[in-house]
Length: 464
Figure 1 (tube, helix red, strand yellow):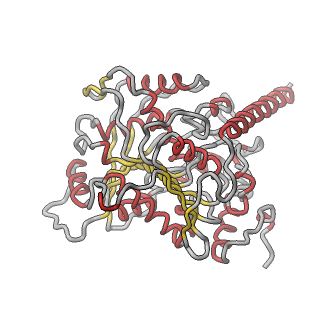
Figure 2 (cartoon, helix red, strand yellow):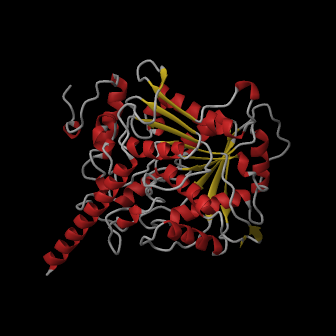
Figure 3 (tube, rainbow, N blue to C red):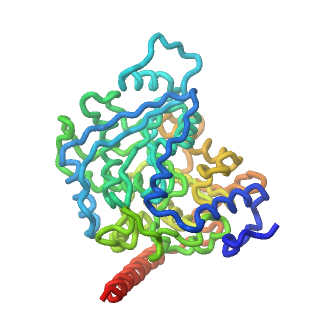
């Protein structure tokens, strides 16, 4: 059968079986379809709710707007780390979708009506005292808790805990740091619930952050905020005094974390054979216009201005201090964004953080959540390990098992599923030095900004 012309620019994998190749050909054709849909169309389609089996409890709760002290806290944290240009975010209510797997042995004496009654049932059906704060991916401009139910329901079922999935505001209409503000508000609402919340304060030692792709980026930024604000004076939120430092969660668990949104590092090109993108379509100057894109005033990147990407809250692969952060779990494929994920994991490990790294041979970005691939053994294995890590973060350690290694890295064979110990630093290729990562990212920032300004000047000239 002849190769689809749209796929001829992709190198052909020598590892994939026929099933994976067929699924990836379909996904690649869809992403690079012609004519390209507008950003508005992509975003709208990405919000569509996925059905949830009857075996799950699910309800949504709206967190009311806190006072502006939370906004000021975020702005100060951003500016204390690095001064970049950005729009100051405006507070808004934040919706959280709660879900858990039903306990089939439980008897129900009445139907739950209020949010608090629904949460009580949800809490009763969990088999461990775990709350997963989940933030979905989607390049900062796609996705929703409703669309992420295939992922959150599996995490809930496999971990035995409850999942709180955040509906944060999306770019480009809500650029950095608006989504990050919503995630911060959601976290505060768990540990310091506002009046009429469906739950009591949740012990942060029972909370684990979990996210994929850009959602992982937002949660990693939240960890940085917790660290940066540790000497902040007390503030009042929803009538409660909030003292600092804010507590860290019990852990951070990420799938295909997106630490380099400008795709500055070599794996973006070297690992095309295993992944989805020839280029990021919507970053092209000729991309179809719509009410959302380009923005007014225009910028070259959907999430933030190009120069703002010099901030580690946007680009976690850039240097920052992560001493004292909780245990971290990274699941990746041999994907285009792996260099950035590895840089973040290496830095955390070098600064004393417990790190677990698992890399699946020949698998693409977010393979465990992609249509078609999510039913494969690699996705099932990844989801089980993801949930197991979340649960292990909150359960008492068994002294008979000894201490866990501070840094654990394994590589999973595509064909056999065999796991072998490896190194974050050297497998499958040597990791870039931190100074080289920083140099490459800043070089791309300068190049992208120059190209954008040149294109804008040409547009002005053409209208004269």
